[in-house]
Image (cartoon, rainbow, N blue to C red):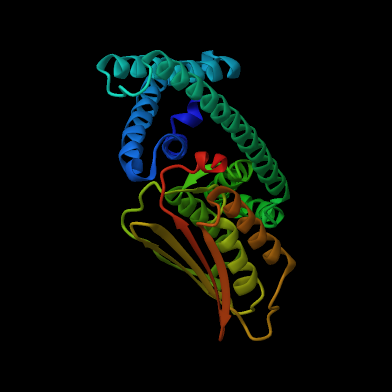
Length: 336
């Protein structure tokens, strides 16, 4: 409860509710000719009470883990009523509302504050329940998507390592370590990674496949010298490279050139993976559709439509474009 209230959305919601309350009170107690004067006075009073109450509640945010939901709700209502009581008592003492009986002014203000606070707390409780349900549903979806990710190159890589063990023990060891990194990443699908880590993981994958395809697989990397810690889901880029290998290299007797381009702006990071395809190669593969659909679902859950994944085929090139917003963490976005 307190966590939600102390966030930007919670504070904005309280200010909007307070202004709506001020507007209702002004309509009910003032004549048309002095409506704007009364609205200004009431708005100033209400917004002062709301702001001071939130400042006090923010001080309790540090110990929220020790408080139950009922205690937090009581703290919100009690704080608003207490601040209203002290503020209206001071205003009555200064006789700023001389036309009203000071005692009844304080009592009515506290009653209105308690009623509105109770309704607002109930609304926030419903919102929190919805957010928790959405978070649980999103986590369940991520778990289901993770269970579907099975890198098809696993068996081919193991065979490659077995062959290298007889020819080049050092290369076999490097391949086994690269495979271990990919397997570890497959266990962390949906969790936070960084663009730099994802690029390194993609490079390890390409190194594995180059042992299998040799000169048939050529990769051209176009990456900025500095790649900041831009958050993105773990194991997002590797499936794009895997699709490029499937379509461009494995399906062609002469191999393919895979190009990986990374562009950074202040708002987003863009990764483009393209590969050449032969005219007689298959235009679609079931694994490709599943992998891209899987990535799209994970991006939709974590970025709420702010990330895009598109693919196009033109002439003899197949291109996949990934655009993600620049942020240091996306863990809180599920609860938005």
